[in-house]
Length: 230
Ligand code: SAH
Image: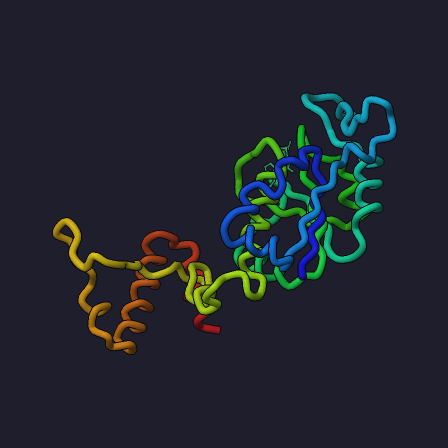
């Protein structure tokens, strides 16, 4: 079982959409334990303040290291501590897989202008971004990252084989998919998929995955070609 501690000032945002569908079932079946911890509970003053103005001036507020430190110490027992941050390395399928093998994850969700740098240093925190844009808070990013991680936990996806064929496996995007009706508004399903000839289907899918990747994601296609060489 994966234990996840999420440190947030909006615990009511959890489990959010993770409570539905496959991830919802994973939570119910205790394949993952999700604890949303209110950082404000670790503020000592009577106003329960978790933030203060930036040293050196400038707009916005910064989350305090003392309050965050207490929240971490009280809840994190082992494993990685992650800060959702636009400065972090981009979340990838490979990273999601890596995280799905951990026993415990502690995730800090920033708000305002972010968190005091000393927390990142003191706890050797890994920063992860979900893309080159700015959100209002780390909660949204944490939910997306956890969705990607939880679906990879053993037994969460009904058909385990579906993981192996997906986009980003082997640095390729998925081949085009079709279902019934075989003819729709004058468009038919590619002949080969109706042939029942598994080897030809497999070959066609590989070619289409390569062509799709080359067309839609030339950057990824380059990595694919390089990885094939080695
Ligand atoms: N001033 C910061 C942005 C703060 S946004 C900067 O310029 O880097 C507020 C919070 O939202 C951040 O602390 C972080 O936890 C979260 N956040 C915003 N964008 C994100 C992204 N792309 N990926 C992950 N977390 C993000």
